[in-house]
Image (cartoon, rainbow, N blue to C red):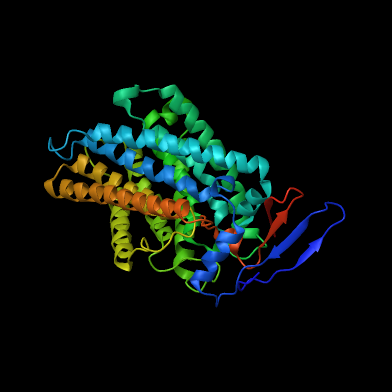
Length: 408
C-alpha cells in the first residue's frame, strides 16, 4: 500500500484466505487521497445501496403532488394546460426509481445484512428507514386520478400500511431519543434527519382527510396523527436550533438536509386546512404555519446550496427536492382557496423553483453517474462506511477475487 492508508496482512487457518485491513485516512489527508481511498475500498453502489437513495423517489413524488395540485387549482389560469401530464410523468418516474432502488436494497438486506444493521444503528441514517412507507403515502396522495381513476379502497389499504409502519418505526426512534446510549441519538443532539421520523404523521393526516378515515372508521385518526407530528416537530426543531455545538450532527452551511426543516410544516399547512373543513376559507393556523415555512425557506436559500460539490452519497442532494415541492404544494393550496393574483403569482414562482431544483439535482446526479462509469475504479462514496471508527476488510478468496466485508 503506497497511499496514506495503514495496512497489515494475515492468514487464517479456518478460512484460508488473505485479508488486508484498511482504515480511513486521517482528517488531514487531501481530498484526492480520500477519493482514491474510496476507489480502492468501496464496491459497487448496487450491492450496497444506501437508504438515502430513497430520497430520489420522494423528490419525484413531491413534484408529482405539486403539479397535481396546480392542475386542480388552475393557478396558471389556462396559461399552461399540461399540469396533469407533468404529474403523471413524475409519478411514474418515482415508481420506476422506487422499484429499482428497492430491489437493490432488498438484495442488500438479504446478502449484506451487516450493512443494513450499520444504517439502523447510525444516529443519522436510521431515520432514512422511514422513507419506504413515506413513499407509499405520497404515491396515494399524488395518484393521477384523471388517468387511473379514484381507488379509495386501495388508498385506505396504503394508509393502513403506512400508519402501521410509521407507528412501529417511530416507537423505536422515539425511544432512542430519550434513552439511547449512542452519541448523537438523543433528542438533545437532534439533527435535520430526525424530521424524517415526524413528517410521516403529517402525510397520514393529509391522506386520511382526503379519503375520509375519520368518518368511515368513527375515530379522528387524521387529527391524532397531526397532533403527534406537531408536538414531535416542535421538540426536534427547538433542539436543532439549540444544538449548534453538536459534533455528531454532520450538518454544514448550505447542506441539503437543512431543507428538511420545512418539509413537515409545509405538509402540516394542508393537513390543518383540510381538518378545518371550511372549503371557502383558509384556516388561520395554516396561514401562521405557512408564514414560518416561507421564512425558513428564504433563510435556507440565503445560506446557499452545496450542489456544486461532489455528493458524499447517492441521493443526498434530493433532500432539496421534497421539502421545496411540499412548500410549493402548500402555496398552491393557499392560492386555490383565497384566489388572489398575489397568491397565484407566489404559487407559480414556488412550483417553477421546485421544478428547477429537480432539474438541477437530476443533472448533478447524472454527471456523478457519468464520472463513476467513465473513471476506472471510481465509485459512489458512503460516509457511514468511511468513518474512522469503521473498518473495511478487503478479502482475497482462493480464486484471487476480491470480496468486501464491512465490520464495526
